[in-house]
Amino acid sequence: MGSTQGLSSAYHPSTNGAAERANAMIERYLWSYTYYQQTEWVEFIAFAEFAYNNTVHSSTGYSPFYVVNGMEFKPIANLLCADTLPCNVTDWSLRVRECWQSIKIALDKSSEKVKKQADKKRQVTKEFKVGDKVYLSTKYIKLKFNNRKLGPKYIGPFTIEKIINPVTVTLVLPSWLGCIHPVFHINLLKEWVNQKNIYMEHHIDTSNII
Image (cartoon, rainbow, N blue to C red; front, side):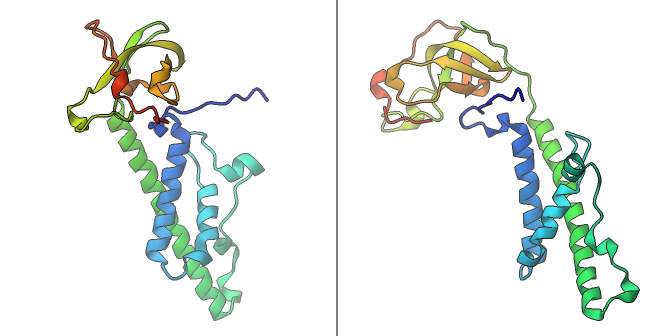
C-alpha cells in the first residue's frame, strides 16, 4: 500500500497532529457524557461513538461513516415514529435525542477550540539542514546537579544527521548521553552561533531514556 512508519519526536506529541486532534475530540465528548449523564453514561456511550463517527471531519470533509460505508447514517432516534411508540420508548427516544444534540454541540465547540489553540501556538519555523551543528535543550535530560535550575539550559553542539520533516530532525548523539532517542522537535534545538562547546558529560545521568 506504500505506507511508511512515522515516529513523532519525544515530548512533542503534537508532531502527530491528526492523532492529537482526534484525542481532543474524544476527550471532549466523553466529558460531555460523564457530565450530563453521570448515572447513565454507560448506556449512552455507544451513542457518543455514533455521534463522533457520523460527524464530518474538517481534515477529510467527510464523516468516518461515509468514508467507510459510502453513505451517512441517520440517528436511531430519527428513525422512530413517536405516534406509534409506548411511553417508555418515547421517553428513551427523547433522552437519546437530547444526548445526540449535546454531543453535536460539544464536538463543534471542541473543533473550534482545538483550531484556536493551534493558531495561537503556530510560529515561524526554524530552518535547519543536514550537517548543521545545534545545541540540544536539557529540559528532558537528567543532569547530575544539586540544583537543576542552575545547570546548563543547552548542551552540545551535535550534528543534524537527518531532516525527518520541517519540524523534526535526527541528531548524532554520543554514547555518554545514555539511551536517548535521537529524534527531536526543533523547539528543543538552538543554533550553534557562538562556537562554544557545552558537553557536561560528567554531569549526565546515563540512565536517560527518552
